[in-house]
Image (cartoon, rainbow, N blue to C red):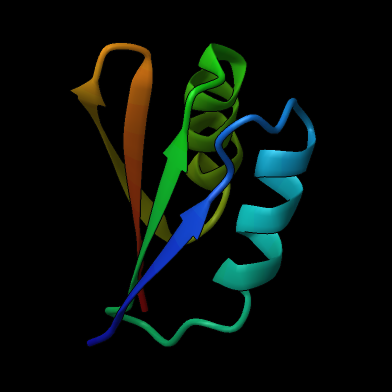
Length: 75
């Protein structure tokens, strides 16, 4: 199990979703991807996108206007 971090601060949709998806495809089951974003649309769009895949997502606000979206790849 490994953890990877993707900083998409300042990036507008759809770039955070596209970059997250590209990196997610390289992960092994059990790996986690932590996406750091300040774009509220990405905070909504990323979990919706990964809901279609074998993944679980969790969102936490780490500072005012900055969120971490943790995406765990499932088997």
